[in-house]
Length: 243
Image (cartoon, rainbow, N blue to C red; front, side):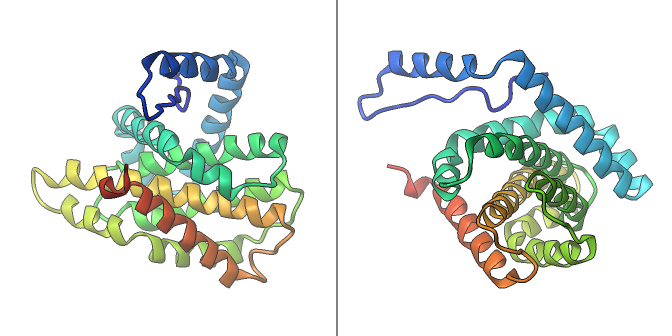
């Protein structure tokens, strides 16, 4: 498996290349083969569980495009990792480091799965096909924190969040319907948005569980935090915001 999320360069105002190289080596040595294997094992388990929840025709289509979709998805996640790390670190302040590591494996597996589905060539596939991805993720995160999980309530909340967050993704779905150029252009938008939505949802779940808040009793707070985090990520990705 390729080393996804492994390289993280630090570029100062002087653009010191030596510092960038050192930073890359330091980050890579912090991730031994055992961690890579655990992350791969978590993804395989997660992806398999999600496939079982999808319609057979859909899961077959996702598998047929799996190799190309996964390669594109890993590139998307690698880019967002470098771009959004600081935002997530600040958002998750106060979460135990060991617990955060466990949650990261689950959130990463979910985000990668979401991106792979987002790159699928099925028109309008990625919006509500994210529901089983997010339900699986939220159930596993609740288990890490030793909390109970309601599949039915989670499904309702997840559907609402998809409707809220997939505004840009809808453009991609429309493009998928355009012959010849539609699939590639649409998938590029949806893969990025699907993974960002899923990761945002995951870390909001982690934060609320860590703070002892019930996501079902405080659904408005949950949706509010999700919207705030997702908008922050969207704004940080705009070239005009980069200095």
